[in-house]
Image (cartoon, rainbow, N blue to C red):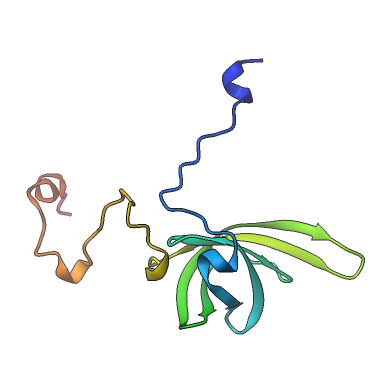
Length: 136
C-alpha cells in the first residue's frame, strides 16, 4: 500500500472549530420551525450538528442560536447528513451546515481568508470581467 494513502488527510478548514459551550458560547440551538439540535462543533463558517430528525442535503435552513448575550438566526445550507446512532427507541442524525454569513463572535482574527464585496457595493465589471463576458 502506498504510504501516502495511510496518512490522514490535511485539514483544509479555514477557521477554527470550537467543540464546547465554553469555546463557542451557544447554549441552545434549533432548526426552524423549532426542532431542537445539538451543536457538535461550530466555526464562524459552519456547524456540525446532531438532531433527532433527518436534514436533507442541499436544502436551506434557518438555524436559531442562543448564547448568554444574544439570540441570532443564521441561514445556511445542509452539506451532508448521515445516521449517527441507532437505538431501539430513536435515531440520531449528524449533519454539516455551511452558513451563508460568518458568525461574528467566532471569526478568527488570524484568519487568512479574503472578503468578497456584496453585489450592491461592487462599482461595475472589472477589466477581466469585460474581457470574458460573452454577449448573447
